[in-house]
Image (cartoon, rainbow, N blue to C red; front, top):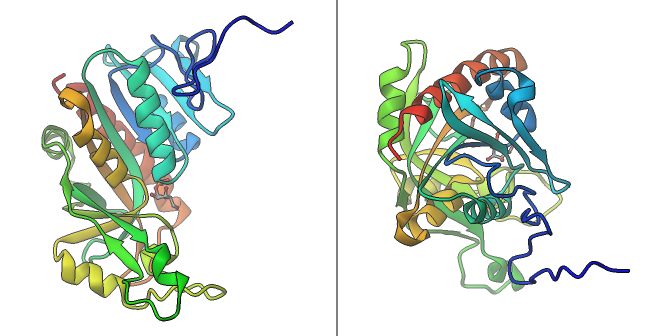
Length: 281
Ligand code: R1P
């Protein structure tokens, strides 16, 4: 005997109103959200929430999303880990928008590579604006292609309220840099990494990025999708910003040590919570 509940193919939710991939339903997500890549990072930030772990609403989905909702200094906040890439950001923003009422403020707290020699590992890269960088599949279709192997979009700005609050609240310990973020559709080819095994034709990509956008600061894999969807949200119901810990110094070829990560991540996670709890909604 099947259930009489009919699930729409257009925007599937289950009998309880849970969205198909993130797995949350109305009432389980706050209007202020910190999104991260790793569930470990989400739990570290959640340690700062009011009360005990048992007071939190926690939803884990089989598609790799973890949502933790509670309060920080009595302000409702959700921390959501989404994994990696623009597809996961798209699932997250669209499905969570569908279950939250009213205006939303989404802050991505991620990691990135730095394209500026003075902004090295352990520092913070604020994404004042973001562009998309995609592998141009048609270029690789034929050897005689006249196309460019990688395409860069136009920039989209982040909201200004969160970074101003973050700068006000940050201690002198934080090394803050602000600049353009490039959101790539691969950790490897479209971030100019040389890996062998595949034809990537990306040897000049980083130089092209610098030439096109002299204020470039960071490379990562989600922020442009977040800024793009915020800009396309009807009645501008979503405002968004991204702050990244620099894990990879691409200029000097240095990767963050685990020891430094374990110091920076919880410290900045708390700072992000403090700033997000103060944004106007
Ligand atoms: C790649 O290692 C991942 O790390 C960065 C990239 O954007 C990509 O998701 O961000 P997160 O640390 O937030 O996952």
